[in-house]
Image (cartoon, rainbow over all chains, first blue to last red; front, side, top):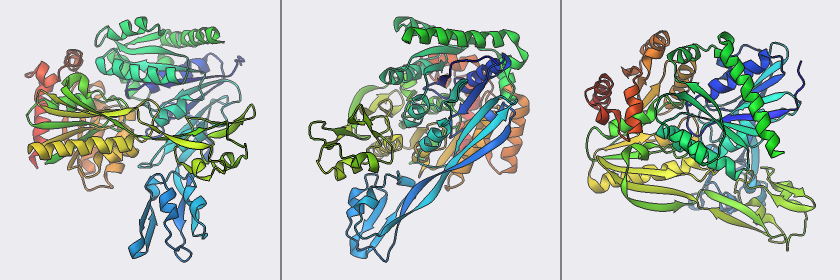
Length: 293
Length: 288
């Protein structure tokens, strides 16, 4: 086993469907095949897909829940203070008809209503949000999957839970959710470095700019992989150059690659060249990070 | 008024491509780009005469160090673990602060105030076939669901004012809050999928969500020729679940070419096979 300084690398993109998961799993596979201890954390909790590509044995499962308040009607004097304290419009309060109710879907579990109530009229129960499942892969590597229940308000608590306990050495790859809002921040926040995957189209470039702006705000070092190169135009390359952003790797648009992916197979299992390229990617990132040290 | 939402679960299946085509096939259309994390529709529709407005997504707590007594009550009560002691000073992390206001309400020294985050915006502009409403979420902000609701509200108002017919909603990826905000109360949902295991998996998840609402779903398989076997599997899954398959679209570089030229594919190449299929999909969707 090659000992590496623990390094957390997030694979992200503003736009969905650019190839984040493709990069994450093949990166994972190449590092694993070269004898490294590697963990992949699937943080795309609304649509986790990593386990469709990797075979592993489930070793742990944690259910994630959130505390949601409920009103003890017998104690409630309908003073309205909890309603006033709730900053998320999660409490319906109609004093004239003595009606009060908590809307679970809007509650952020901040505890303000409990703090507000002087009559012990609010208690809390657990609401299921999702699960974090750990899988052991070939005895030395791991997949940690965050999966949020369909329709919950925010996948962030599930993502944060999945990223706990990933500090035990080895390389950690974080397959991040799309977008630039809280779930993206939660996934990328703990990473040492971020790979933004884009495609050379106007949509790809637009969303790359948004994601890059977000990472700059977070002072997070990052580089870019252009996937499906050959499609679209050269604007993305010009942008990279103008903004001094490192092009880490290019993956051409290729129907064969698309087919292999669509079947849930890994390109790096059948193609030595790409395995080598993903290993070179790892070296490039380490190189890049040394500059920041 | 008919509201049609276009969703996908998985990103990158071709949701916006289809949406741009629908948006450029008739007139008097309002397009609501509800992918507020990464709004792309304006790149194809090139709207003009913008109306722009700021939007408060939430609040962040600010601490006045000069009056803070370091009593630690806020640290104890904050459930988002956003407040901690750093080098002896009480420090609030912006990325962890949820804006619940609890700390500012309970601070005995009244050292905490709430600052609105108002860098997010919504826009209305005219484009060649109607009007586009979109928004820009300030990076790292939450409440995209609330911003989606605002975009939809503006879109509906425009339809009423102009006495128009169709709102076309380009929805966000995923199955969470912004997606729910995008489909609540719509008349029809079109789910764009692709023939990959992940695309199929995410199609099932989004269908689970849609089944909670009384909305008729339609499925479109995009890039169907990239894996014909999985395309067939999706078709028979739709069939056995009584879901209307509105059409299948083969991969075509024309779609990318059109996008690069800021046009929808039905504008760029109106007589191409892909354009004809998209037109037939639209007819199926608006028929009943």
